[in-house]
Image (tube, rainbow, N blue to C red; front, side, top):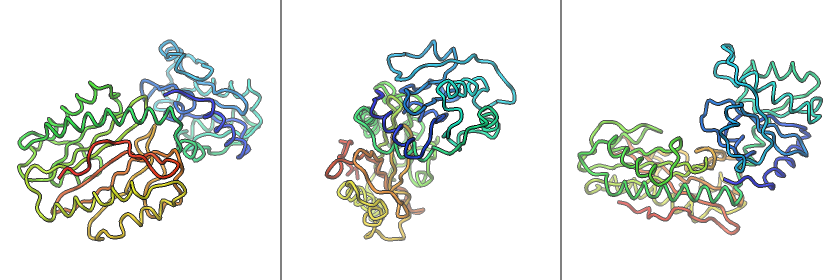
Length: 371
């Protein structure tokens, strides 16, 4: 992913609108969004400081600094020494916070309003922040960052498209190797190997083959159970490329689907087609969700119809009837209608959809009609 100056200008405009002088970002996907730096491990302490009118300052340890590629980072890199501290276990290190606070002081924002990510800062860390900047005010900037990330710029869209193509390689593999007698785990490992061999990032890969009623549980893992001779089989694939996610799911049958199984699948297929047909800029998501399921029997249990996707697999907004958001050009969604029945099984179709100027574009090429 290439960081763009336009992205930084969006951040500065949002800060000015909220009268915020500086932000400290500690959630790793948001650090990547602001700087282009993708931490190699989730547990490494990393932060980003942005002061209005200045480029981002990336805060990393001295060891991380030696390993990162500066040509991929659009930020001033500032380092801190790595010194362990038992009371800071599972938190960002005190050295990192001292470094971030020092950057705010150096840029003249120590008496201004400082935005931070409330859900990603511990009580201990916030106490240090308040004591170190006694003249500053503080506010949560999390929702602002989510809104900024909802519309993707061209470089982000290219990364998502690349992830989608890799996911499709995994799905093509699944169509060949998911057969009765093989365990869910065996099939899933083969699919993951194909994805990894095609360039998928290890941290973002998930290939799950779930047979029978096993697929009715959200985010369930493949088991040692063997795929049956005449049942539904759900193929659920996620891939990450340059930190950006794609999700593709299809529903297969290992024999001949009966009337109930076909009805379940047809309901999911209809919603999937409706989503692609109806999604367009300015449409309220609550109206979209209601319209897509208005002819579906309420007895068919379903989950959220989709969600925005990007540096996180699940981002707001979600496609559901109580959403307060509207669609905007540049949003990318994983549209993943899922219906399940305790007696029949689970049917799911997940596709990647990009909101365009006049409607939406399907980033996934593979057919939905797999039964």
